[in-house]
Length: 180
Image (cartoon, rainbow, N blue to C red; front, side, top):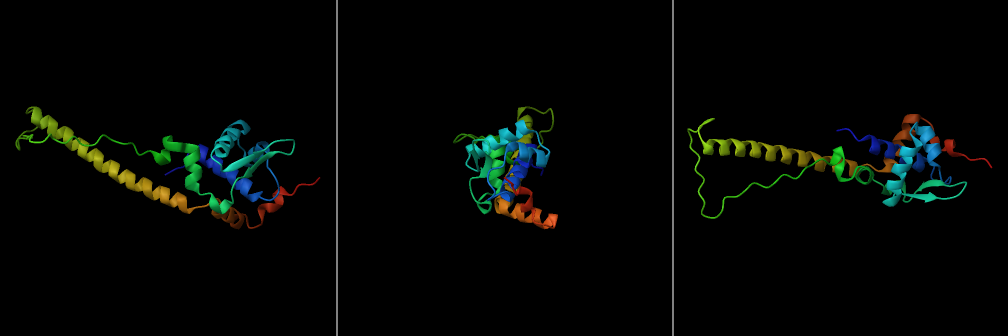
């Protein structure tokens, strides 16, 4: 599974904000420059994150964005849910119509020797077979989706920050020292 560009960029911005925690607000322009992102697109993502309470904005000449919660309280499932919503690739389980049940007392007649082109009952059986196969495939994808959500819910922004610091081999907090 691959995260959308929207989620990937949003997560990158949140990591920047988490690494800068305690040093004041960070402008969208600075985040975009550090992450090589479009400022306009990043501002759209930050607006969504703000609307859902993951970041706060600070107005003014020294304004920018800060995390609205501690990094350990922000999960990747929350971030992807905010940025991709129900339309994202990570949440692509489509609800299929439920199988039609025969009405009470109805009898379905399907000839065991009916093959392709042998009448209405064989076409119904073929359609029902395709429908059954689709329901099985949907059940598999629902299970996969549930596991993905569980995995994303287990990863916090703090986990990613720790990983970034470990990979960099040095504390990244020095990037956000401001001189007046």
